[in-house]
Amino acid sequence: MLGMLVSDMEKKELSYLIKRELEEILLDMEDKRIDQLVKEAMKERYQTLFQLFRRVASENECLKYVPQKRNFK
Image 1: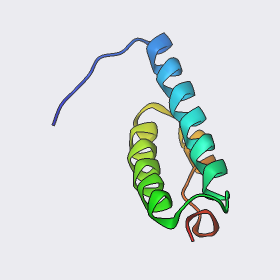
Image 2 (image 1 turned 180 degrees about the vertical axis):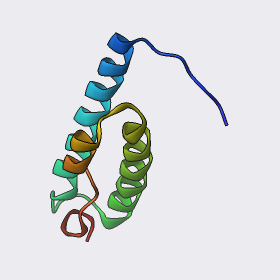
Image 3 (image 1 turned 90 degrees about the vertical axis):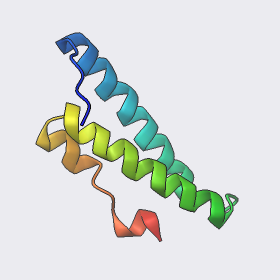
């Protein structure tokens, strides 16, 4: 297990960056032009980012980004 010390400002910045990336992946998942193989990789990336997001965000913020079945067909 690795640990990392971050200030409150850095925590907010991490949260902001991860949220933007999660939102972008969700938008791309709905794009019909994107190949299914690429979408599988995006799902894996989303899961990894979401796990990281859970470490820096409040429970209420996390609930907005819980992976939904409809987004991950």
